[in-house]
Image (cartoon, rainbow, N blue to C red; front, side, top):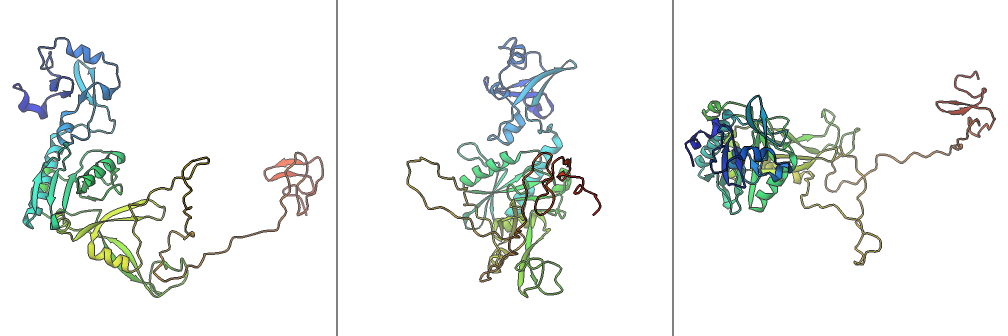
Length: 384
């Protein structure tokens, strides 16, 4: 430890895993006088960046399970350590203060409802959510304010690790285009300064929370029938999800109390739609014919020829249903239409032979047009 340790947010620092200590790039000896020439040796290292052992100290403290590797450069007479990840933004004191403010707000909201809270609680292998809340029935929730860029692959991995630890992760972003949206269960607020976050004002969730609406399928309904497709009305109640805008404090309390639960659905194009909703709405959705995505589904691996393992029953695909339709229990499935057939004879295409007509003309000396080879009598635009 040295006299610069208290100035970590304001100095040009990088963590060296080989030496297990911080390097201060603003000092000639990098703060390691017993290693003369260390800067030149590090600059001469041409191994892949992830093998050079240089870590971002701020990322290391915030997310020890997600290392952010760095590389060194020399620009305009100054030594610089840069993130190898091109999407990683420079750290600012304002962003760190925002993160702390959100952590304090989560904790106050959960404690006000009688739930136990730990800030920065680590697991046995070093993984830790920003705020760990032990809610109703002993269920644990990890509230994660993700204010900087993170890839979809990385957030899915971290979400899986939290689930393995028995923690339901609650991801919070301020970016409407964040890659984590719908990759995990998320919420979003406006991007506010730390002072506004700490104030006891209404901090609303702009996305990630929904509530159920039941719409009567009659002639005045603005939506198409989910049973009959685009035409007709069935007279039944169809479930649909509408955006809900609660206060973040109420959201934290309701998640910890088991009122809000994570919901996963499939969109019309087959992608995931993940959000939080009241448990009562989830039950009503299923009771009215709603279908939720099953996270236990796994892709079927085709059996290879010549394999010596016993043959398994073939899993057949269910009949195709238009993605905009939502069948209710007991409803018969009626196909949209029969496939079109035609008895037209499609002639072969031969060079310089006219292929016009129901029975091919077959005249030689035809010329090539965008639609094929035609003689003068059958060419496009010919009178007749």
